[in-house]
Amino acid sequence: MQGQNISDIIEEYLKRILADTHQIEIKRSEIAQLFNCVPSQINYVINTRFTIQNGYVVRSKRGGGGYIRIAKVNLISDADVLDDLMTVIGNNISSTQAFQIIQSLFEDNVLTQKEANLILAAIDQQTLAFEDKRVENAVRARILISILNRLKYDD
Amino acid sequence: MQGQNISDIIEEYLKRILADTHQIEIKRSEIAQLFNCVPSQINYVINTRFTIQNGYVVRSKRGGGGYIRIAKVNLISDADVLDDLMTVIGNNISSTQAFQIIQSLFEDNVLTQKEANLILAAIDQQTLAFEDKRVENAVRARILISILNRLKYDD
DNA sequence: AAACTTTTGACTAATGTTGACTATCATTAT
DNA sequence: ATAATGATAGTCAACATTAGTCAAAAGTTT
Image (cartoon, rainbow over all chains, first blue to last red; front, side):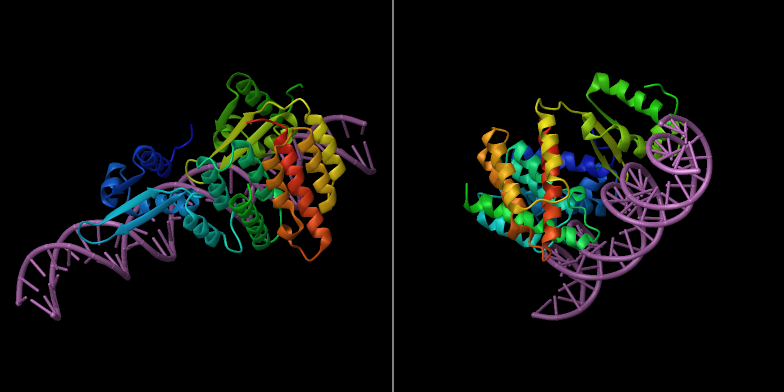
């Protein structure tokens, strides 16, 4: 229902393929041409929608025969990935990034829909509501880390 | 419910659509133009007439291809019980009191064990970690109220 | 008159698009 | 080997396109 902009359409295109193949390798310029946009738009899509927070790992190579490879990873079953995620969170994390992480955990069946929604309610921007954005992001990071640790060790 | 002012008319327009479709996605500027008002009036209408108390959930996105999505949700049967709890919580709540509330929600089968544990992890004293106890209790209250509001409807 | 609600617009914030410039790698020429 | 060239992908900042906030002004109700 959503997706009027090119970025959303490209995202959808790539994720549809990834639903089947677990990993894809693209040529940046080809995809750009396919969707009639500049090549750097592909970078934008990848940087905003295929991050580790979203459960994807990207590798690329320049020069002749260059490529961009996107792989879907599992957040919890792979301990290293979870550690990477915690590193990304660090001492502060934005609302958008946090949303992506919870979304990924739901997609990996670590969280039920209801659990995910409750967590999202807790770390929502309007919920935390601090004057200082840095404080807000710091508190969100602490909550998220606390929850991830619970998911990792308890349960 | 007479449509004397523009806000009432816009409200009626949107709710008529929502009577059929359960969810709508609008472009703020389009609706504003349709009713010949400034865009921010749409925000006013949404903030005063499409709240969770009224059974609506709103989500939006800015930038190219941006939108405002309004969904009608089904409030669960004991939604007003949750409202009472929120009144009790007010603007601040201690760790101990919060624990009791979560505990009782678990006993009433509103929350599963895992859901309860995740919430407790989020509002834990060490997680929030504020110097000032008053700030800590205020943040905990906001989180708890947001979660209770989310519990009022399914999905 | 006071209190409350609605209307308006200037300013802010978030997200998306574009292109010039840079970095890296493979191949070919010297 | 080394250098030059061509073929990729990456970065970044300017610009474009939405929606959000806030408070003053205007209108309405008590």
